[in-house]
Structures are given as C-alpha cells and as structure tokens.
Length: 254
Ligand SMILES: CC(C)(COP(=O)(O)OP(=O)(O)OC[C@H]1O[C@@H](n2cnc3c(N)ncnc32)[C@H](O)[C@@H]1OP(=O)(O)O)[C@@H](O)C(=O)NCCC(=O)NCCS
Image 1 (cartoon, rainbow, N blue to C red):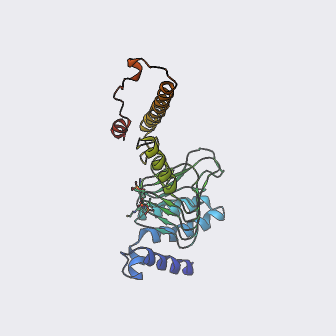
Image 2 (image 1 turned 45 degrees about the horizontal axis):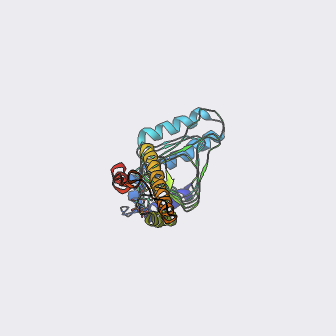
Image 3 (image 1 turned 90 degrees about the horizontal axis):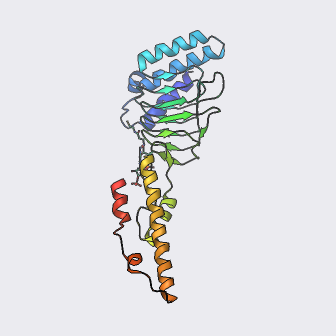
C-alpha cells in the first residue's frame, strides 16, 4: 500500500509541472486521494463486501469529485489530474502509467450486468479532459501509449501509440492525410472528400457528394476531349461551363 502511494506521489511530481513538493501532492491532489480510497474499496469488492466497496467509493466521490467503481482494475502510477467529474465504470481496466484528466468517462453503452462492458486502457495511455471512452458489450482496448484528445468520444479500439480526436473519434494519420492532399492536388480540388473536420455527418455527406461531382466532372471532360479528338463535334450546350466551383462549396461546408 505505502509502496504504491510512494510511486503515485513520485509519478505526479514527474508528470505535473505545477507540483512543487511531495507534501503538496499528498495533501492537495484529489486524484491521489481517489486512488487511496479505490484501493480500499477494491479490496472490499474482491472479498465480496459489495456494499462496503460501494460506500467507500461513494465517500471518495463526495470528497474528490472522482467516481471510481470499486470493481474497476487500476494499475500502478496512474495519475488522475484535477479529477473533477471523472467516472470510471465497473469493468474498466487501466494500465500502469496512464494519465487521466478531469471529466473523463470510461463508461459503457450496454446495460448487461456482470459482463465486460467498459474499456481497457493499455499502459501509458493519456486521456484528455472531457473525453468519453465508451465500451460496447465485451469492451475494447485503447492500445499502449495511445493518446485520446480532449473531448473525444471513442467507441472503437485505438491502436497502440495512435492519437484519436473528435466525435466520433478518428485516429490521426498524418501519412494518409498527406496522401489525400496529394491526390486532391492532382484532381485540382483541395478538400478531396475527407478533411480534418469529419465529425459532422452532414459535412461528411456533402464532402462525399462534392468528391463524386468533381470526379464525374473530370471524367466528363476527358470524354469530351476524346470525342473531339475522334472528330465528333459537341453541341454548344454540352460544352458550356456551369460555374461549378467545388473548392468554394467545400469551404462553405467546413
Ligand atoms: C490529442 C492530443 C494528445 C494531440 O497531441 P499531439 O500529438 O501533440 O498532436 P497535435 O497537437 O500536433 O495535433 C494534431 C492535430 O490534431 C488536432 N487536435 C489536437 N487535439 C485535438 C482535440 N482534442 N480535438 C480535435 N482535434 C485535435 C490538431 O488541431 C492538429 O490538427 P492539424 O494537423 O490539422 O493542425 C492533444 O491535443 C490533447 O488533446 N491532449 C489532452 C490535453 C488535456 O486534456 N489537457 C488538460 C490539461 S488541464
């Protein structure tokens, strides 16, 4: 117990530039207090003292603003920074060295009892302020060293080392984004369907339609040129440009 506490205090000093002394961390960090209470609550839970576990957890929530279900499994050197509004569900598992900021929910979307329904965080995961990581039935894993952006809503597994942002969360992939930008340049249209702001389903649908229109337009022009090259003279109305400006429309949607 004391060894764990010593580790917790050291890890807070390492990870929070605002921490000035170990005494300050011990006395003024609700995340540290919540973990001390959780160890007691979890010990009671494992001995089938369910009410006692829940009651300790309730007292802890009252004092710290952090709600950890006594059944949750929490690793070593976990740092809950600020902590107010954090909710950690019964079947959640948190690996060693994770950092969790205020208002994070490690929750579930299913109402089944007794089954794994909350997420598992691998070692060293960082969950930004306000993020919701919501496990479906059977839960899912956020891989080792992954980062979850503040206010992200994660409902699918996140690979180890990846960064997920947005609602619903998407994994940032700088290489793929660069590839898309290159392809967009070749097509003469900068948005090319999937942009950084793909959180809004309506924007997503409109970008999809714009992409399709741009591609259709391009094929049509190629077809016209080939027909002309083959000696077919096109009607003036077919050749006329209807002022379709995909880039301008795309900016309006973003
Ligand atoms: C997600 C996070 C870990 C990313 O950090 P990073 O790996 O350094 O990534 P970057 O800051 O280079 O951002 C990469 C891209 O994601 C975007 N992004 C970053 N955080 C985001 C978030 N929370 N939501 C949506 N997009 C986000 C950036 O705008 C950037 O987009 P761009 O490439 O178009 O410019 C970080 O931004 C974050 O949210 N950390 C949590 C911090 C927190 O909660 N602090 C509380 C202190 S009290």
